[in-house]
Every structure is written in C-alpha cells, then in structure tokens.
Amino acid sequence: MSAAILVTGGTGTVGRKLVRKLVAAGRDVRVLSRKDRPGVEPGTPKLPDWPDWFVGDLRTGHGLAKALEGVGIVVHCASVPGHDVEAAAQLLIAATRADKPHIVYPSMIGADRIEDAAYRDRRAIERLLADSELPWTVVRVGHLHEHLDAALRRASRKPWMFVPADTSYQPIAAEDVANRLVDLCTPMQAHQLPDVGGPEIIDAEDLTAYWLNVVGKKRKLVPVRKRGKLYAGYREGWHLSPDRLVGHQTFAEFLTELMAAQDKPAEDKAAAKAAAKEEKAKKVKEPKPPKEKRRRGQDAETADDASAEASESGDKTPS
Image (cartoon, rainbow, N blue to C red):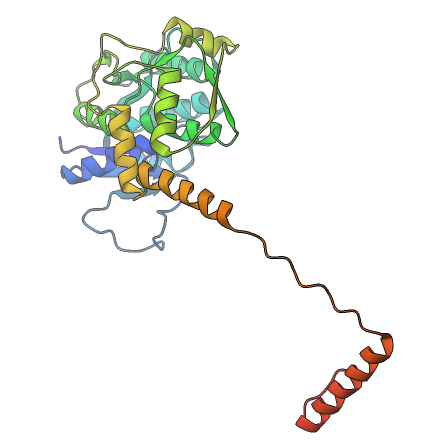
C-alpha cells in the first residue's frame, strides 16, 4: 500500500475527488497535468495536504517517464477528446518502460456494444490494456450527475429542449465513482470488474423536467427520436446496468446539494423572477418633456453669455 499512485486527469470531475480521498488516506499521490498547479507559483514548497504535481502531455508522451518513476499504481482518468486511444497508448508504452505499474481504468458502461466514437475509443483502450504486459483493472461506470447537469444547462439556453425519446439514464455521482476507484488502488489486478451504475434508472423526459423544476427554469420539452448509433444504443439500454445499482447519491440529492452549495435555492430563484416581472409590469414610463425649440439667434446669444461667464471664472474654453 506504500506504492506511489499516479492519477492522470487529476483535475477532472472524478480525478479531483479521487486525489483528495487518496491524500486524506495518507497515500503517496501524484497528479499528471498538462499545466502547472493552478494558482500556485512554480517552485512553491509542497504542503502536506497537496499531491505531487507533474507536468506532462499524454498525446506526445512528454514528461511521462519522470512522472512514472517509482509509481506502483496508475489511475487513468484523463480524457483527450479525439485522441483518447493515442494518449492511452503513450501511457502504456511509458509504463511498460518504467516499473510496470498496475493500471486502473474507469471505462463506460456500453463500451463493448455502443457503436459511437467515444464508446469505441473506450473499447479500444480496454483492448490495449488486455494485450499489454501490464497488470490492469477495468471498471465501467455510468453517466455522471455532473456531466448530465452540464449538458442540461447547455440545452436550456433555448426556449425549448429536445429530449431523446424512449431513453433512460442511470446517473451516478463522481463521489461514488471516486470511492470505487480508491478501493481499486492496490497492487492486485482484477481485469474486467462488474459495472458501476447509479442507484436509479430515470426516463430522460422525467429527468429533464425534474432538473428544470429544481433550477427554476421553464422550457418546452420536445421528445425526439434522435438518430445515430449513440442514441440507438441508448434506446436498447446498453448504457445501463439495472443489476448494478451501486451508487448511493441520487440525481435529486445531487441537485439539492448543488443548489445549496451555490446558495441559490430553486424556490428563492423562482420567487425573485416572479417579483422582477411584477415590478417591471408596474413601472409606467413617464413621458419625456417636449424639447424646447430655440431660434438660432437665441442659441448664439446663450453661447456668448456662457463663454463670458467662463472667462470671468478663469476657466479655459476650447478653441
């Protein structure tokens, strides 16, 4: 248990929580990031509750050898959109040249069946691990509460929201995923583990309607049978694991905590909006007084008087 643990993607949704838990448990933790620690000047002495920070690039392999020195476990949480497979290959090559650490990889439920780019990449990475000389463990997880919330916020920018018809989700909290990964940070490999899904399966329309109610927004929901292999897989339920309701936090509990953390209860927000509308309706625009028409001669005479007053007070008038 004394082996150093390297977390790629240690600043991401799951990685950040995982790093905090490992540090709190007294583990020797390292974070691999493309940039220096945010908000900390390079060369600043490390505090006891900080992980070691290594700058590296998974796409090029730069910095990986140094980050992997003395590492016994790697939790690969990083995602490089469009280049996930190449990034994982670079990591496995560097790990093979190092001390051959145990690689723990959180994949996605449905990676073996859904024919979409993101899922195909996860499937390819799983195959790279299985064909490597490294000890490895893969656990597939469901959609994160945090990611669904972000997607709904983007979709709610318009007066209507398209909802995938005949589709359900089984969201899970990043906290629950991080807890599972902590358990896997041992030298013992387990290869393919059972899936980790959220505690409930929710219809997409019900989930969206509930989210709108909590955040205090009104949008027209338009169920649509979305095209493409991704949503075809979703309609088949291949992204769900009904026999593995592992997570503890429901989506409703997540939203409640999120709103409390933002100090913006949904009821207060809705009341504030209603009060603002009512106040706006009460306001009556006062008619502007009619402009006084003056003859050119009067304007010139007034301007001369103003110049004279300015000269007497010592002010300089522009020429």
